[in-house]
Length: 265
Picture 1 (cartoon, rainbow, N blue to C red):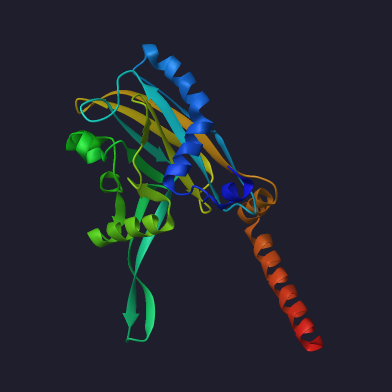
Picture 2 (tube, helix red, strand yellow):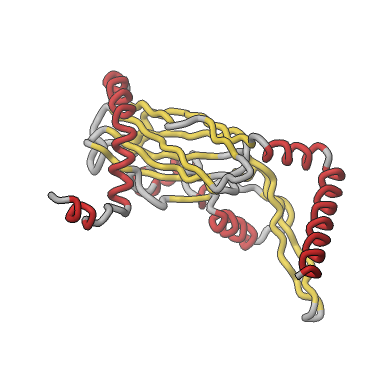
């Protein structure tokens, strides 16, 4: 084939091309995991265990991959992967209009132990793989998260929390199925958006056979701020007054420089 003809060929894009590239990168790792899994029902690992957040961080991803002893698929084994991030309290408030002119804070609900990150994926949706009692017990699904709250008791506050977290990209359920290579190798990509919180993360890989969890792997990774981002975050947390004054000073300086440039223009 000539150079001109080769140059005219379209570049392969789309999900298929991405999967092929992932397989090319992960194949040596998957084969190593498969060798370890010969005497174990489930073996899993992460493509990386440290995520560094810098000032220019726009998001990242990591891959969960592994192998099973028996074939995966309809009539065989199933795999569920759930990733959870550090927890924190969240307050959901309802805005109330006063005299039709001003909006003020109204009733609120405070949720304790809310995961800052939650991603669920499976070879099929968890509700199709497990009995409902087990799915609820293992908190597999956004509707199964144990979101206990104090304050206002209306279910609307829980729905609002779910909507906010889904819109942020930090809570994801079954957006893409786990990919299967061959019959016993599996992998899935976990997206980490720019707003991902720092801290320790836990990934559970569950092997399901005949609607029962028969094996599991617990994997850990950590998200840390580094460089300038870490120093800024440390100052903001340890010395909030100094951080606030510095922000005001920077804003004032930027405004003054802008006015000078506009006057010269």
